[in-house]
Image (spheres, rainbow, N blue to C red):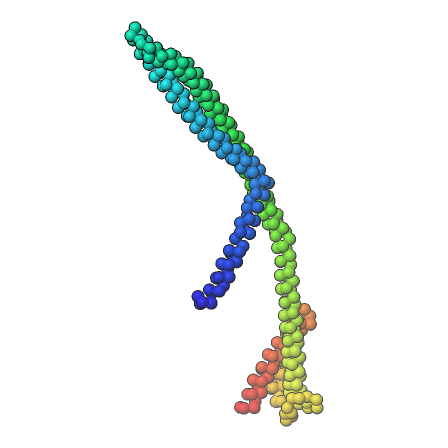
Length: 305
C-alpha cells in the first residue's frame, strides 16, 4: 500500500512546492488589497513612522550621552587646570622663570578650555532639547497610531455588526421563502404524487373488481342455468353436466334464496355508501357468493347423503 501511495505523495508534494510561492504571493496581494480597502494601510504607515521616530530618539539619546560625556570631560579638564593655576598662585612669591612660563600657558589653556566647556555645554543642551523634541514626536506618532487603530477597530466592528444584521435578515428571508413558497410547493407536489398514485391504484382495483364481478356473474349465471335444468350454450367453455330436476324442497330453498338476494340487493341500494355502479357490483358479488356457497353446500348434501 505504501508503494502504491508513494508516487501520489511525491506528486502531491511537488504540486505543493510548485504552488506555494504563487499562493503566498496571492495571499500577500489579497492582504494588501484588504488593508487598502479597510484603511489598515494607514495604520501600517503610522507603525513605520513610530518606528522611525523611535530610532531617531535612540540616535538623539546617544548624541546626548556623547555630548554629556564631552561636557563632563571639559569641566574636569578646566577644573584640573584651575587647580594648577591656584597651586601656582599659592606659591607666587617663589616663582621662577619656569613657573612664570607655565602660568602663562595655563592662562591661555584656561581660556581655550573655558570656550570648549561652553561649547560642550551648548552642545549638550542642544542634544537634550533635540532628544526631548524627538520624544515628543514619538509620543505624538504613538498617540496618532493608537487613535487610528481605535477608529479602524470601530469601523471594523460596525462593519461586522452590519454584516451580522445582514446575515440575520438573509436567514429570516430564506426562512420566509421556504415557509411560504418552498413548503407549499413541496406539499402540492406531494399531494399530486399521492393523488396520482391513489387514482392509479383505484383504477387498477376497479379493473380487477370488474373482472372479478364479471367472472362471478358468469359463474352464477352458469350455475343458475344448471339449477334450472337448462342446457349450457354452445359457446360456454364450462364442462357439460347431466341435466336433472331439483327436488321440491330444494327448489323452494332456491326460490327463497333468490327472494332474499333481491331483498338484500334493494336494501343495499338504499344504504350503499359507494357509487351506484360500484355498489351494485359489490352487492351482486356478495349475494352471489353467499348464494353460491349455500347452493354448493346443499348440492353436496343431496349428492352424497
